[in-house]
Structure formats: structure tokens, C-alpha cells
Length: 214
Ligand SMILES: [Zn+2]
Image (cartoon, rainbow, N blue to C red):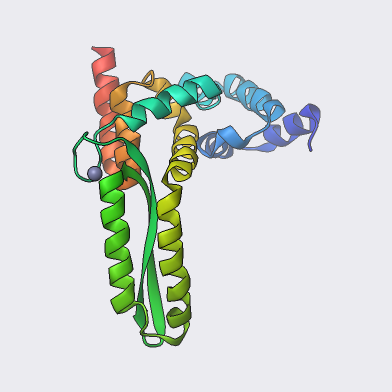
């Protein structure tokens, strides 16, 4: 663990690009003394004030009460898979394996959807693996584990929801804070988890900031 003086000395030797790279990496993971020194460097080097704003938003962690409130909003969102809001959302995790004689491929699905979509996806993945998962020596044995694991996870949807939504909220701290945890921003991160599209994310932020400045 570095002292604040050692950190100052280190950061002093960084060029601007390295400082910006550090800001754009996961600032949530830095220690409090490192954040103090990083902010000092931004001011000293007269870098854009948006970097300070970025750090403040990313480090404005949610209290357990705030996190629970966002999780409650997530529960009642439209399902990103079937687009219906007839059921509460839950955590889904399943995988399917394709044996290719000398190799195999495996695809994992970890997202938040309604119970019906989760059940349907698990069923489809099990059926797929039953037909396609056996065709290589290694995947033959792994397939037993995958199918068992898919079945096991169907009884753990609520635990999966707790874990996935907590991680999702933590990972998107800055984005949610910037958008005052609006329902649209919460819906966006859930959709993004189901079907990632970084381009869309950028468009969303641009649209939002344009609206804000008008
Ligand atoms: Zn659904």
C-alpha cells in the first residue's frame, strides 16, 4: 500500500495520457488516497473538469437502501426478451455446448428477464445440449455437468437476481448517477445486459446530454 506522498511522487511522473488512462480505467477500484492525488493532478495540469465530474459520479456509491430501490424498479420493468410486463423480472443463467468432434464451443447466458423467458431459455439450452453437446470426447463429460448446472440454476433465480442486479448497479454507478437513476436509465442497463450494444449506449448518453443542455 502506497502512502499519499509516494502516490504523489508516482503520479507526478505520469504524462497527461497516463493520467487520463487512469481516470478512464475503473476509478471505482482505486483507494481513497489515490483518488485525492488523481484529483490534485487534474487540477494542477488543468485537465478538463469533466474528469473530476466523472470521478465524483463513479465514486458516489449507492447505499444499500438506494440499491434496493433500484432493484425494485428493475423487478417491475418490461422483460427485455419478450417485451411484456406481466411477470416480475428475475435472474437467468444457462449455457449450451456444441461438441465438434475434436473441439467444442460453449455459450453462456447471464441476464435479467421474466420467469417465463428464463424457463423457456433453460429448456431450449438443455434440449440443444442433449442433441449437440456430446460430439467430442471432452465435451461429452462436460455436458453432464452443464445440463445438471442448468437445472440447478432454475431454483436459484432470486439469488441470481440479487447478485446480477447488485453487480449491474455497481458497474453502472456513474451512468445511473448522471441520469438521476431515471427509469429509462435503469431500463437501459438491463437491456444492455440482455443484448449488449455499446454503440446504442453512446447514442443514449448523447441524446440525454443534448436534452439536458437545451
Ligand atoms: Zn420475458
